Length: 344
Image (tube, rainbow, N blue to C red; front, side, top):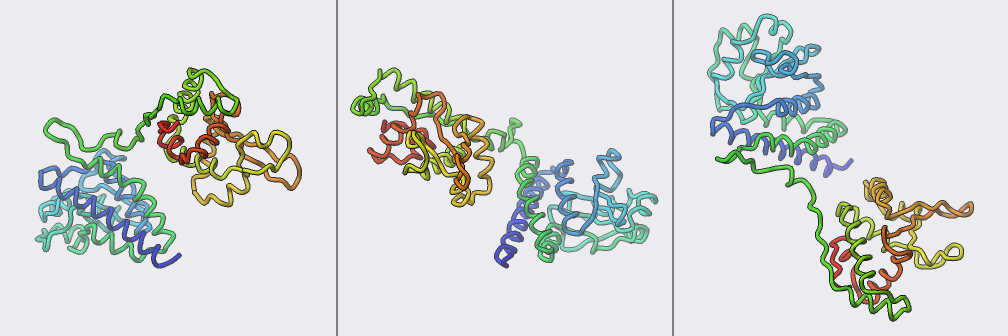
């Protein structure tokens, strides 16, 4: 893997952890120094990646273990994870530790998410009892420096975890306004249902009449309403994938009678031309909503094909739809992705 890729992983991890540190620091200035379990678990997993620990959340097991949040008995290490930065916080943590905890965890560390102070005045007696020193106070900078030395496979695994969990952690740390409303809610992460833009469809209806397939305008409108309704059920990226499949359809007769009366895509070709990592999932979604069907090859040595149909529309409606779009220079992403049928 290239140095550029390694640098990208490190940069993204550093930026993400710095964002969390900044958010925790802001909360601290407002007197909000509590960290919820999800934030503790976030840093638990990060520490496990960085140092090959097997830390567990001690609060989950013991309902707030005094002085400690995370512990790994096999490696004899435990952490207090805090949003505070003061000497008083460190001294208070050390004072709360029992003899049993000190025996179980010979190495005690305090992870200060909001950053360390320039210096610390620690209780010498408590430090001697616990075996603690100033170097056992860590912050986000220490974690970021450690990430630079990770093997590439561990680094990528850490990057994947941070990327997957960052949004949730940041949401959990948000500060409500005076009315108790939070900046982020679920709707910010949910794709809106698109609203079709429909013409009176007289142009398309006239085209059908000119090609010998005339029908009442009411039927044309009902067909387009069904098409837009079913397209709206698909995620936008899936509509884009469908459009790509249609654009790469077979345009020459390659199989038996009636082949040109269908919209088909060579399945082997699709696999070759599409490097999109979620291709199989898009195909499953399209199949689930009856937009595509898989046709096995008729003969040995031939490729299978994906057959594309617009559900709840007249038989072979796809063909006049695509012909009209081509004759009028209408880019397919306009009706099929944006649901803009104003040119029809």
